[in-house]
Image (tube, rainbow, N blue to C red; front, side):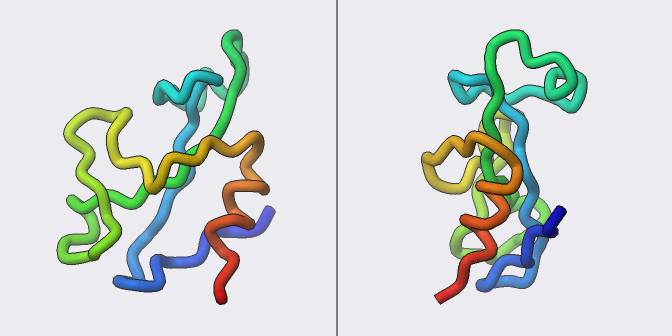
Amino acid sequence: MEKLKPCPFCGGEVQLGINDAEGNHRNEDYERDPWSGICYTLQHFYENNKGCPIATFNKHESDGILGTRLYDDREEAIQAWNKRI
């Protein structure tokens, strides 16, 4: 599986978030048994990337999502993030 490239603005780490079909944050256990559908999000937290103009705050685990897109699978999310113009 392809890895996520670092943030083009700060070089920091971007992570995949696991969510149910409604976009609620879930953990790895849920990914093994997704009883309410599954989707993925991109996360880039300000706490780990201070000063980055696109980092988001993670006051709650469901916060911190980059954009509004829910991806159907890991590869789709990775390809969307890694695509550079």
